[in-house]
Every structure is written in C-alpha cells, then in structure tokens.
Length: 348
Image (cartoon, rainbow, N blue to C red; front, top):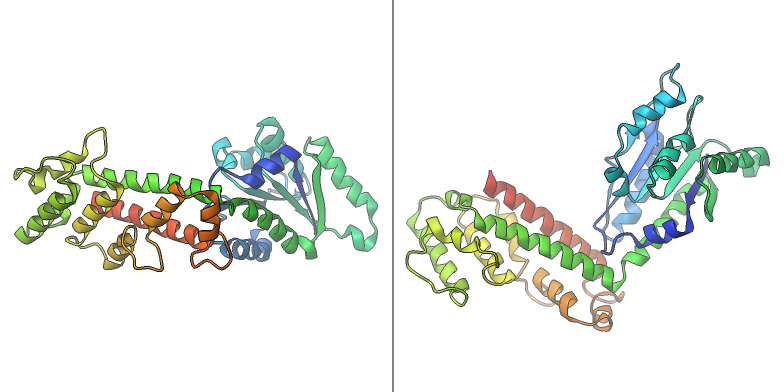
C-alpha cells in the first residue's frame, strides 16, 4: 500500500498551527470502499491523540463502494453530495483511497475538494503497491503524474509504504500536537471555552424552567433565596419580593449579574435541590471549588488570563508539573460536556 500526503507549504503551516486555540478534538475523514481495512490506522491515530488528551472523531467518514457500471462522474457526484464546505473546513485531515474503483480515481474526487472549491485540508492518499521492494519506478511516476494532473502537487509531498503508514501519520500528528501545546494555545482554549461555559450558565439562570426542577418544598425555595441574597447582594439591592418565581428576571439584563464564580455557585445551589445525578453536581462544583494542590477550573482559567507566558510555562507546561496541558484539555472537555448535559436537563 502506497501512501502520500499532499500539502502546499502555506497550507501545511496553517493546518499544523490549526486554529488559534488548543483543540479538544481532531476530526478526521476517511473515504474508502472498505473501511474495515483502515481499522489499524484509526486505532493508531486515536491512541496518538489520546496521549495528549485529544479525542478523535471519525464520524464524518464515507464508506461507499461504486457500482460495477458506475463511472467517475457518477461516483464523484455521490461522494461530494455527502460533503459541504463547512464540514470539510472543520476537518483536520482527509484520508482517501487512491483507487476507489477501477473506474474511479481518488485524486479526481479530491481535485474538486482542494482545487475547485478552494478548500485546503491535509490529504492522505493510500493505494496498494510496493514500489520500493519491486523497484517499480513506473508506479511511483504514475502517482506523481496523477497528483500533478489534478493540481494537487505541493512542496510537501511524501510517499510511504504500508508498513510505514502508522509511524508516518503519528509523526505528522505529533508535529501538530507540539504546536498546540504552546502557552498561548492553551490560553486561547480556556478563554474561548470558559466564555461559552459562562454563557450556558447565564442562559440557564435566565430561564424560569429551573424553578420547576427544584420542586415545591418550602425548604428548597428558602435555600435558593438565601443563596441568591448571599451571592448577589453586593450587585443589586436585595428585596424580599425576590421570590423563586422572579429571581430569574435578575439575570435578563444586558450586563451579566455578578461574577462568573458566583453565577456558578448559584447554579450549583439550584442543582442541589434537583433530581439531576449527584456525579454531575460534584463535577460542576469543581469549576470553582477544589482542594489544593489541584486547581479549580476557575483558578486555571484565571491563571491563563492574568499570568505571563513565562509563569504559565513553569506552572503548567513543564514535564514535572502536576497539571500538564493534556489534563487541561481533559478538564475542559469534561466540564463542557457536563454543563451541556445540565442545560439539557433543565430545559427538558
């Protein structure tokens, strides 16, 4: 099996840097007529990413076997109908069988993705053959010819045989990882995700739906009113008429009420009076309250917001730290999943 990655120089730099933030997930697409044969490389990719706390999503992969009489244009139309510009631009890599069918050339399919639609994603083509072992230079030349004919050539063109595939792709991914592990990538991730987290918390507090989740117990209602007064009396003039039925209105203003931490604490107070599983309550509390030497999610976020790059490198990005960057990814992923689950519960 021959494998070659085609990436123009500027595109390679762009994709190795990825977005401005450290990523929680890589989305990788396979296009093949028999996906089962790619099981090993999928496992290698997933394990490589997992080592640094990155989830791997293969859900956009396309398995489609052309019909015996299906020509290239018919096949291209069917494959490309499953793709969209937004979907492709969200991917981190596309792996495509060069010979999808005797009448279907993988480079032709990718030509429309890369050249005609101006979409640039790292491409991995694979095909049966061992030109190094049998000295078949004609096969190698044919591959380059197809690349050039379809406008897919670039300065970064690599050819590897099947037994080199896993190590080569893993090496490529590790180069991606090394760029994402920089301090400012982690800073971007935390600023972005904690802002989204806070927005979800505010949306929950704005709605009256949480009132029905705490039941009719007078003790529960008294606890919620007491916590509201304790956490927000420095921001508004507390009034007795701030009963359960209208507390949510205090969060409807253009400026969010209170601090990020206080909003989380108030939501946790609400959750303690609901039937949501305790594991979700405990995980949510770790956003703002966790015993040292560990740090709460809020503490980590504040460190990246207010400390210098030098200080953050010492605190989080050295091998000897107690909270390496891969755990920052893990904590962020867990907390975002948890708050989305809480949101779904409250809104149901």
